Length: 341
Image (tube, rainbow, N blue to C red; front, side, top):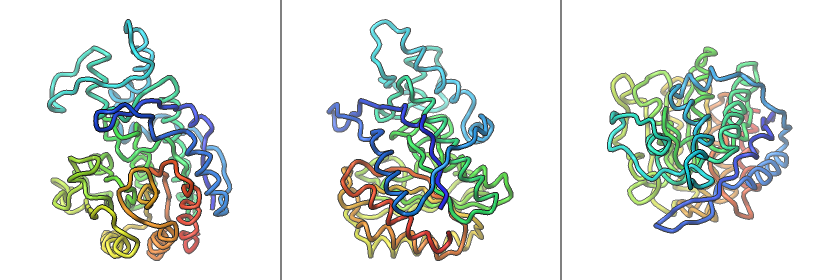
């Protein structure tokens, strides 16, 4: 399987993360790259760097106002007397329609949903090349490949049109799906991260040209909290084109696979001819977030079931955090896609 990665993705080195009132080390460490790359190579992947498709494919998803913010905010932040070394919001608007401030502090609050997406000196460059990684992998499918793996880091599925959150800045899976759509394909996005793909849902919520499906730990007591329930089905033209399949905490392989059957039926009924798999490995029983209880072997069974659709698959890396089995979990997951490779 062909795989894409760019070394500039190492430049995002987040330090801070606040959870339950405590300041902790950020879980989205660059060390993930080494572990994921080893796992992908063990599955037979060969890596190449991405092309630079420019801002166009990114701006097809994200607003220019937001992209200006992401690309300039760190330098602006450093001009604030006494500022910290990472851009972290401390105030938020009550509504997205509230006034847009000129202040760097105010704009950080407008464009960063939480404290889990700190912006440092290398964040924009890493996020840009993470998106280009997904774009190049999408182009491989448009050129005739049946599968491709994008080692996109930082991840993307919590990023909305103009809002970062949950370790995510640019929505790589959404950008890739839009690229495939522009290339004449009919994409479905299947998000198997332990966390609901709230940014992806928000981007496509009013659209009927991309199906969005997310299988995740129930958000009533789990991040991202405010999205991810089954009644969220889309809006306007998009009504019926969004499917959320929340699972009880601790769900194991068998129950997960039963819910996956529902997702795959919806993808088939949509008439998708390509699937973007937002691959989170944090559903693992030993992942630090402890949301679900999928095993290493379970990831192979999940991807084999997806491959059973017989459709080209673009696999975009989302979550999956530091644990001894992270690389093995990716090896298992990628191995299951051999049926379409």
